[in-house]
Image (cartoon, rainbow, N blue to C red; front, side, top):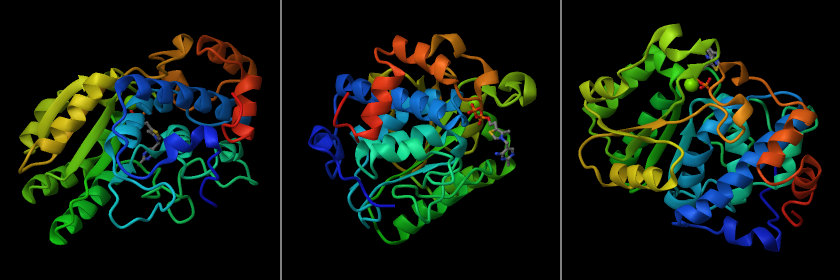
Length: 306
Ligand SMILES: Cc1ncc(C[n+]2csc(CCOP(=O)(O)OP(=O)(O)O)c2C)c(N)n1
Ligand SMILES: [Mg+2]
């Protein structure tokens, strides 16, 4: 897949390096990302709506404030690395990467289609910006530990971020990786858990309770930050604290709401893996200040119209 042709309207979003954008500007991007998610999912007729909308704000903060990346050169050796282990939230991952300029926004409309390049669960070999092929839950943190350990051995200053789901915390491999990260004092690593309280089959507390997550990560030797996962200022504060905490990895417990931004589905696990119909997307997009037709046209034209 080719990297973005970035229309002039989008050039500011696609620059190389840490953008360090303000919370106000990040909220504008996050709003566009939510519009992208709803539009591409309705267009595809399949995909994961709920978790994508809960992860939107912190993933936007990472790519548009915190991380040192070059969308025009996704394999840039100096880059920071973000691994999305709860990979079923690919609509948000792809939307953020496209907004940042890794590939054209129009690619979002090929999501989950045979003709398109963006698979339901991401493939790192042929999708710019995807750092790990994932979908089988529980493995991303182990990969992140490997990348972080390699960076330490190479004296490389990169930071490694790993997004995980709260239901995903039920996977045993996560705790083996957590133990390893603390043992090797991987302070270049930060895990962000999307604590939306639900998973595919219902409330996480009922399926298999993972709380108290803060106590668990602390017991494994991590620094823990429990924060609101939708307030940009809180997210930026947590990310900065993680960056500045020496000697141990940090876990950010991002308290979020599944489906955030589409009030009709918020907190409802039924929307873990369900897409909106075009009619439902129309209603949701109206609440977000646009229409399905308008947003489809923005994506088709790679941001040149909106
Ligand atoms: C190893 C493994 N087991 C089961 C699944 C099926 N699965 C996909 S998403 C999911 C729920 C994960 O819950 P959570 O991490 O809370 O994600 P959310 O529903 O909040 O997006 C499950 C069980 C999987 N992808 N991988
Ligand atoms: Mg969850």
